Length: 129
Image (cartoon, rainbow, N blue to C red; front, side, top):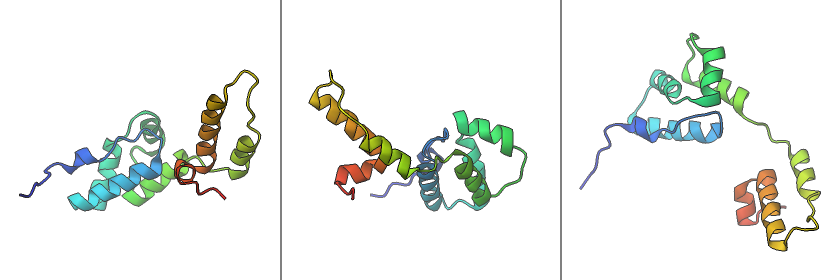
């Protein structure tokens, strides 16, 4: 039995300005399934905007005839938070247990700081060196 998904647009996530890389990866993978053109990808990108991403588009990009790749580059350039490893490592390495904090609570807080500093995947797999 085969199942055909008629409307692949629903597979693409909404983009609010967070996780730009994930949004564009999912969008591009969905485009492969739907055999979308670059023009369709650009149009669908604008349909899937909300919040911060929508405000950026309305104020800076609306009315400009941008293809998908330039549109994607503008969003990533504007909304992607660059990683500052030195700052993140400093925050991680100076985290101390508070006097009234239980060990379990400190461990949870330390794990959150580590995930922010090194990425969830690195912390979960123990791949921090």
